[in-house]
Length: 126
Ligand SMILES: [Zn+2]
Image (cartoon, rainbow, N blue to C red; front, side, top):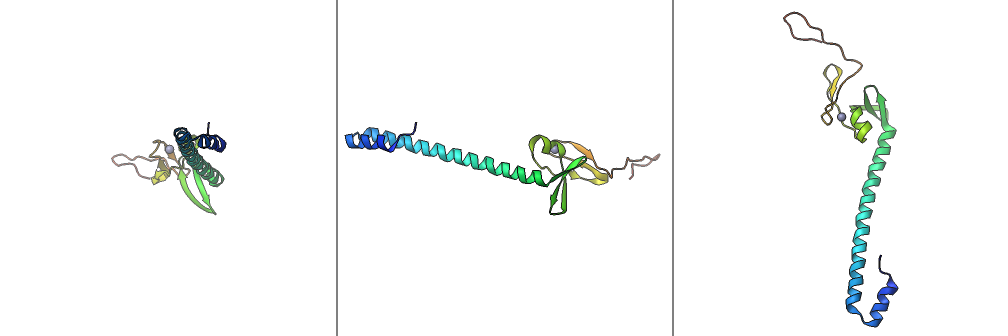
């Protein structure tokens, strides 16, 4: 329990210096705990605000998410990472609309993906 002003003043009036010092230490500890808790709450709030902002901007376009930045589409972002961790992880590569998440190692193919065709004696071409 946090010592109150009157508790400390009563001790001061009695001349109980050692007890007053203990109460002041208790107050300092309580202030530090409150400061830590405040920082923790601010961090949580900032994270929630960020999530809310993203939720309003994130658009699901199968198989991935895109961000609508005032009409300019940014992406694609990993569906698995966003749905499970609310993290926007930019998908990489993109050749032939094949995308990879470097975070969760998911692999996606977009709507413009073309099945590679093989010819005898030659590598796949698109
Ligand atoms: Zn991912």
